[in-house]
Image (cartoon, rainbow, N blue to C red; front, side, top):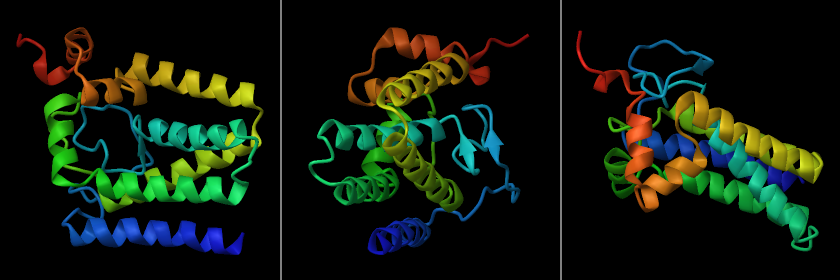
Length: 191
C-alpha cells in the first residue's frame, strides 16, 4: 500500500510539473486562492481549488471503485486504485493537450476554456482519489445515489455535468447547447 501511496503522490507531482512546463499558471491570474467557484461562467472557473466540475472528478473516482467492486475486486483493490491513479493523471495531463482544449472550446459550455491552473488540476486529481476512496468504502447503493445526486445537482445548478460534457464533446445535441447557453450571462440580451 505504501507503493500506491507513493504513486498517488507522484501523480500529483507529474500533473503539476507537466502543466507548469506546458505554460499553465500555478494559480489564477487574479492571484487569489478560493476554495469554491460557484459559476461555470466565471473567469475563476477551473482556476481555483474546486468548482462545479470538481464533482465530475469525484464521480470519476467513484465509478472506477464501483467497477472494481462489480468485478468482485477480482482485479484486486491495489490494481483498481492503480487504474484510478493512472486515469486521473492521464486525464489531467490529456485535458491540456491542444486537441482536447480545442474540443472543449468548440463543443462545451465553457467556450473560453484556457485550461486549468496547476492548483485546480492537482486538486481535481485529489478529489478524484477521494471519490475512489468513497466509492470503495460506501455501500454500492449509496455510491450510486450519490453519483446520481451529484450529476443532477450539477446539471440543475451549473447546467453542466459529467454526462452533459461527455455528450457535447462526443456528439453535440442542439437542445442541450441551447438550454446551457440560456444561462450564460454573457449571451443575455442587453438592457
